[in-house]
Length: 152
Ligand code: CA2
Image (cartoon, rainbow, N blue to C red; front, side):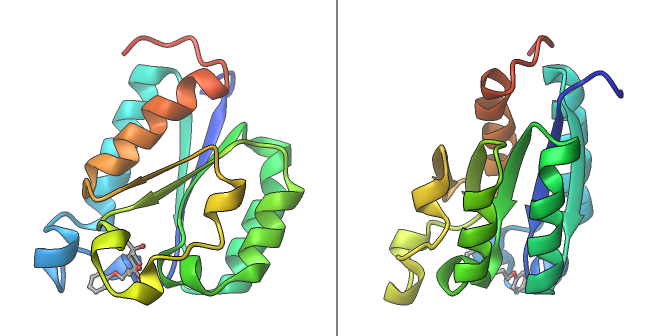
C-alpha cells in the first residue's frame, strides 16, 4: 500500500539460481519463494516490500541511488559483490535509508574470502546463516527503524 514505508529488498548476482543448484548451501527455496514470504511478512509488519534481483553491479548501484526517493529502508544480499564491491559500499554510504545486510549462508564458516564484507560498515546490522528466514528476520529488524505501525 502506498502509505506503508517502502523497503527495497535487493539481491545480487546468481541469486536467481536459488533452489536450482547447491541446495545444501543455500536451501531449496527459490528466489520467488523468498519474495512471496517477504511480501507476506511486509504486509504483517506494515511495510511495502519492493523485491528485486540483478546480476549487474551498475543496476544495483542505480537502484540504491534511487532508493532515497521511494524507500525508507534497504535490505541487501549482494551475493559475491559483498566481498568485492567498493561501488556498492559507496552507493549505500550516499543514501539515507537504513541498510540491513543478509546472507543465506554463514559467510564466516566458509572460505576466508567470504569473511570480509564491503557492506557491513554501513549496515545497521548483518544477518547470516539462517537461510531464507534471514530475509524475514531482516524485515522484522527493519520495521522499527522505519517506524512501521503494522502488527506482527
Ligand atoms: O550466503 C549468501 O547469501 C551469499 O550472499 C550468496 C552468494 C555468495 O557469493 C556469498 O558469499 C554469500 C552466492 C549467491 C549464489 O547463489 C547461488 C544459488 C544457487 C546456486 C548457486 C549459487
